[in-house]
Image (tube, rainbow, N blue to C red; front, side, top):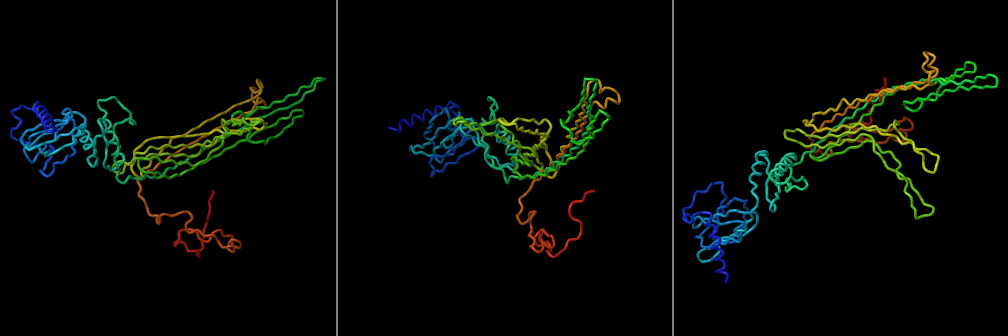
Amino acid sequence: MNRPMTRIASLAALLAASALVPASQMMAAEPRIDPRTPVIQVVSSDASSRFVSLGVGKSVVIDLPADIKDVLVADPKIANAVVRSSRRAYIIGAALGQTNVFFFDAEGRQMAGFDIAVKRDLNGIREAIRQVLPGADIRIEAIGNDGIILAGTADTQADAQQAFDIATRLVNAGTNPISIEGSRVVNAIKVKGRDQVMIKVTVAEVKRDVIKQLGIDLSATFNSGTTVLDFLSNNPFSTIGQTLSNSNALVRFGDVAALVRGMERAGVARMLAEPNLTVISGETGLFVAGGEFPIPNGLSCDTTRSPPICQQQIDFKKFGVQLSFTPIVLAEGRISVKVGTEVSDLSSENAITLTVPGTNQTLTIPSIKARRAETVVEVPSGGTLAMAGMIQESTKQQINGVPGLQQIPILGTLFRSRDYLNSQTELVIMATPYVVRAVAQKDLSRPDDGYADAYDPSTVLLGRLNRIYGLPGKVDPKAVYKGNVGFILD
């Protein structure tokens, strides 16, 4: 019962094949085959089914060990079989999908069977990636009807990302734009020996402040009969919000007392941080050197109890030196690095004072001064990127006094106060990336190498704190050091 059905299906396949070429050429002499055309040689001992992947509009040549009698194509809409000679046939992909093709001899025996999977043609993508990355071993395979997977190996993470970008652009060509998250491309490329990058960052900041305050407060009492006139002036310092010191000088002229408040302060602050980080190429490293300070964030009350029990909620804000960088090792030892730095510190300026609920106590919350820099550059291994020019200078000056009297030349000084502030800040950040290799632990040293505590008699009698300090084998414990130690200040 199955034999007539097979012949009917085979006849349909032959009719479909004959529609592609003239009938006079069905059994013509074998044409010449391009050497690049894939050819499948079928031996007489191998009649089992095998898997064949084809692109839409692509074909494969089948050479059979005996004359072809019948051809069975399960779904001619997916793939078609064209017989050009007694022992050679062509299988042509017509549409996306899967089907089967079987070849029979004159005695009805199966000579060969093929499971055909027709997928989209990826030769254009393969050629584009091969031209851009000739040294990469990247394979491209189709997944489903419209997806592809990238496999194989690449020299660097940048090459793998470039191959993924090319495939994504070509796969999505002619379709509606989609995001990277919804891309039809699966990146399974492995990077050969992913490079590690160490970045050495130097953060140097110098801050200079000059504050000058001078004010005179007058107090006097004048009696005229039964009339008493009390005069009192108290001029505040508004620039920084407070006096530098409570030191003052009191001068009396009869019934007039003059309180002279004057102070000048000059300060220099230097901050230096040199963080070093090592990460894999393409990953992100983060370094933070600083601290956190608490900030009240309302009350949390348990209303199920009587009376309710409330607890103060505290949040913590970070400050200090923060460094984040993402390096990508390119060809010829060059490194594309994204550097982000932030330097922040606590400040009394713009601070707020809150009253603690239920008490008479006050809480002062400081503000944060922050300086940030972020950039993406390409430098060679060992090259230094300097981010300078971050200079901030501010000058504030305020005069408070008695209206009218403070405008009097010379004498007006007795009725006013002057508050002057000059602040200068300069920040320089230098980043140096290196392509690094792993080293043995024996080649590394620690700050405590060779350290040993001193004996009690040595500590008590001679004041020694340590017996040995330095690398093992390189320090003579009996040697006596002669010379200056510590810091030298001029």
